[in-house]
Image (cartoon, helix red, strand yellow):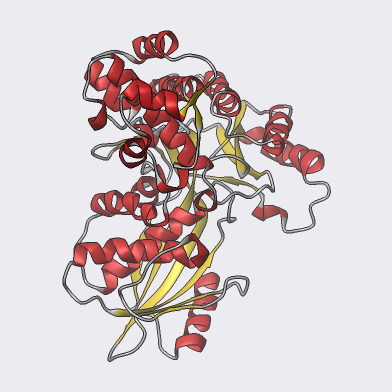
Length: 442
């Protein structure tokens, strides 16, 4: 870590001709169970990993450009922002996530003048891997901006604020990535609940370890509509069910809101979904008729800008995934907090989650499916699943510590035999790591 900071500091000085005032480190994460349920209001169980984003930063005095950002990797171009009244677009590339965090901090500042800033960035989280590289950038820039502007915000507040920041780029996430980024505890996974954020340390069995394997298929959720499509499909299903049950459906946006309003269990909610939503796709006209509104009203009330072009939606299987995944999280939490943890059952839950992601949520990828099968056939493997948003990215597998080397060797020979890059960037184990850290130089 010190060697990386030394390189980052040298790059910072070369670019800006000054010393950093502070450094920020924000870890990536792997979600062990609970995929695509945070934005539906349900809890998750991720852990921070030993791959991270680091930023060196300082303020500037006088007049001039509001922000200058550089990256240690020349693949990512330097960016300058002239003034604080900037807009954010996916076309801004990697720097869009930096700007999201800055804008979140500026909204808290209100009418106060923000400091001019310079930042140098480096990272070890593989981009587009489903390991939260984009959210780590957002959280890191938010933390940098609040620190440089001497804002007194605790880590729970930072988690809440950063959860809204990616919406500046159009992503309707639920807050898991940001919560684990700020609230992670070394040596523990976290059971995270929302509205408000609450966390519980989850001690994992000593004899197991998690391995992260990249499918080599990258996916940027901000550059396509698949992620938000799943968000609004869950929202529309929830609102149709609310309408059918004589509830004010315009105020119910999440599946958990519906469950609370109906006062039912997850099992009962699953029965309602199965009995009330039909198979196959719903047309936009059909949804409008069921909700008794016009197409333009649906656009404004329920849809996001990048999903208003859609004409059909798949509802029943999407909510079936959310409800059954929420059940799996509850079972996982119960098992991991018991005195005698059944690791075989934990592995079974992971494999069930992968099947649901692939079949019901259709957020999988053929290469991820192949990688999961290779992991499951590896020595000592207890379970494996796609992790993160999906449609590519990484797989997380649970194996025994005694079998770790055999597991790595098997996956390497079966999946990465033609991979020419550094293997430890795409296939590695990780212990649960500490959340975001801030280091002042003076």
